[in-house]
Length: 345
Image (cartoon, rainbow, N blue to C red):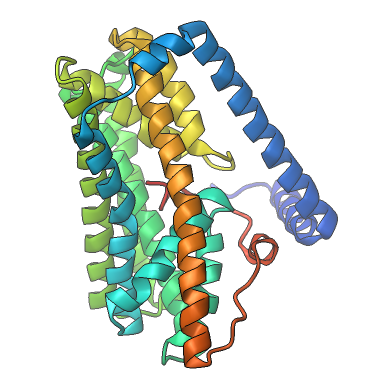
């Protein structure tokens, strides 16, 4: 059923005004300020909750097994490895050549702004890949769309599998409405597939075979990361039932799917601590696992970003390439003003 004309016009005008506001310097400063405030609120809440749990108990619950840290490294590297393979196919280049850029792309998307990594990759590839700039742009755009669709399909599929197979602890209300939720999941996934097929030629420029390959690679990446994540938790506390860990995985998937929220990993930590009570898992253990993972991720992001940047500058100087990589401020200004979880893991 079509919307009333007045409502349609109001929505169109509101969207246009919001887009125009986002593109102004004042709008960008306000949006960035709101993001910083939200991040401060999230951090403040986590500090408060962990204080109530007890910092001593959290410290005592730190993972001691080295397998936790080995699996963390595997989880961290899975995304840039798959991105290197994917863009190797798109750019018809060696994945090893793209791997350093894929590492920095991950940092930009995680710690600067969603999709700022794609902006960085465009500037990087423009000076290094033997391909027209427009083709590079279309390749990055198509992969971003496929990645977002894949992340949504995989997230809905995993959540549906968890919920309807009893692998997670469900509130009473959800149990009573399984059929309705199943219908919604099927409709959403079916609708996305139908839209993708209907508008593929007008939106996507890559070949159908390559798009299917990208979809398969993104699916494998997401499933591998989720499997490694559950394994990482199990090796730390094998006595806890798998149902509890699948519940935390479902919470993490939901937290990473929340749009327009900065520091979604920290939001996931907060959600996991609250869910710990329902699953009868020690809150100190969950707080410790989630906090260590988040801190290690940010520290490793910083170290690799500095190391890769220094290495890339030296290599460019040796090859006589222009060193015109955009600054962080430029990335924040040029990046699309949207948010997604397609690379949050």
